[in-house]
Length: 409
Image (tube, rainbow, N blue to C red):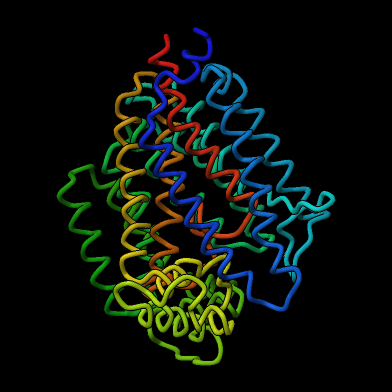
């Protein structure tokens, strides 16, 4: 009896309830998006998602019952296994002109999703025993970045640029939480800003003025100034070449998002139909199973990328507010948990997990309403996708596990 009570000590019921509500909403929307179609494969999405949910619950229960010290010891092993999975998917993976899934009987496993957990654990392990001075050393920053760069390179080969982007985004918050100085973060982010601005001469000119001003006022010395200035200039010069290395559909998505290209029957079609679906829902929606955009299949990828549009059409603005409210509560509560965890490794793991969820939520919601490019990133707990659902439950379990064990011991 004491062991059972100990198992549930420290589990925040509100976090579990918010997660459960999101999953329930997701299953409801998935039923609506998949039940009224002719395609037999699509009609089976709900059943497959339920099976994955049960598997995810099993992972959740296992993770919260294991001492975080074991995750510390096995972090590099988990990372290594995830890298092997990314290599295997390139050799034997399946997909439409891509290599993203490994098929095992009736299940399709996406190694890139599980690699997110491996990278978070490995980064946390690497940074856990380093003080602020060690964290800010160029050598350790380089080694930490290599842990992220390797899976990025492998995932880009699939190709899956949007998922690779997630790995790059989570690196900065984790190293910042570990003690990286704001100036070094600026140095790391400046080339990205230069890359984006390089598509327009005047924008690039203004960005370089801003970078120059920050470098001057930072007073880090002439050597630091010259090195960073040259790096950003070089990035701007090579941006046109890097642009040509993107796939045509990736270029179209970016150009459409920036407003430089309009393609009502192509890339723009997804955004147009998503906006129509959400706008037609009004305040309270058309009602469950009454969405015409969903029912008539005008809305593309409605069970995955644009699941929020289904919710907006059938449950209206109120339904979307409930979803976003649950996400906001879950993230804020998770941040408070990460702040309270005294174990450095567990705290870094929690921040990494939170960043993955935030990245997916912001990009997917932004994509759905047309303020971000169409990237193909699913919405946590709601979008169809077995591997991603399991990983989301693993992330929540890792967030609360460190604090729960702290409460127990």
